[in-house]
Image (cartoon, rainbow, N blue to C red; front, side):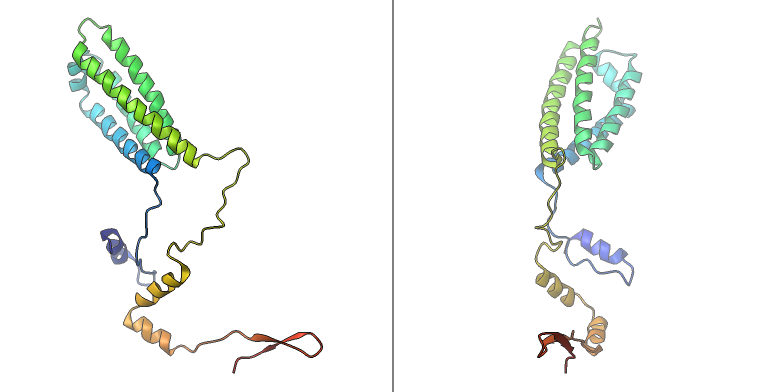
Length: 208
């Protein structure tokens, strides 16, 4: 049993059902990539807010700290959107932000005091991140996108990944001694069965 499952059982109310197992994750590869990029965007945005002066000194563009901080706020917003259910929109907003970063770095390169080495490294970094963002955005859009008028088919899903009988067995095994004693003392009821009548009709017969 995982730590999360144990914690959820500790925090539950006495009448709540117990968590037996969490089951396999429903996140796909593109979903995990989107989540990683979302947290990366938030971390980068926070660093730009806290260390804007260091960024400008490294790039040789002192005096533009406000631009770095605005970029940090944008990164945090993009990260939060990427972590939300609208992850495709968040990823495409990151791609748009990458293009904006390219433009800002290009403007910074024209400054006489600009550090060409640091700007070159920053451009290379942004280029690599842009490629990752584009691939992730396309994968998430393809996975979660639907054609116009198309509907999703859930007929092959039961809600019990390991089967209904396995779920019932696990529920029985997880009962406390008091719950088992209460269940054994309860009378069992059977549904009435239908028997054909002589005239072709059916009538209910109570179980003996």
